[in-house]
Image 1 (tube, rainbow, N blue to C red):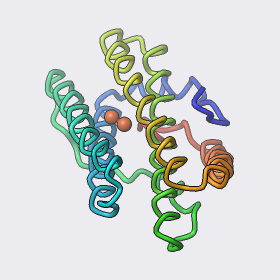
Image 2 (cartoon, helix red, strand yellow):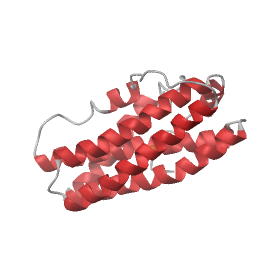
Image 3 (cartoon, rainbow, N blue to C red):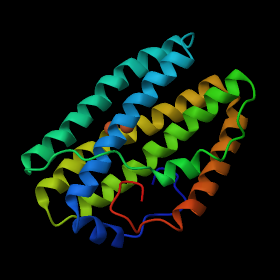
Length: 193
Ligand SMILES: [Fe+2]
Ligand SMILES: [Fe+2]
């Protein structure tokens, strides 16, 4: 599924289930970061008209996801906590060398975004299948569908704006690297932990 090379150990859901407040807080900030990424791509690459159009739509969608998660936190009588450092994303973003041509920088940012969407989608699927809390399981099933579309959109843009063959090679290398990061994760009650 989604080209990922290492599936998440389903026991990760057992850890999550013990601390729903924590996963919801982390998840809310994942949606905020997805929103910020879309805005930042508009700022950095304004001449890519189709990208700007899609990112504008994405900003609205991701911030609506943020609201859905925030509403869930309120419903359950909690208050949104502070943002946490996402070690997975920090490690992932070390893969491509900094700098290079403008097109390369765009392609790298699109591939990172595609991968984060794909992994998030995989985690949401697992939550939708394994959570004993059925209301929350349904919530994650709905989100899973939109994240899968985001993954294909980002990958599609990378292939469109970059050299398709080079992009596919980089994507495979990034997937390989990500599976090495994932081998040490799946132990924390965060979306990527
Ligand atoms: Fe989202
Ligand atoms: Fe997304």
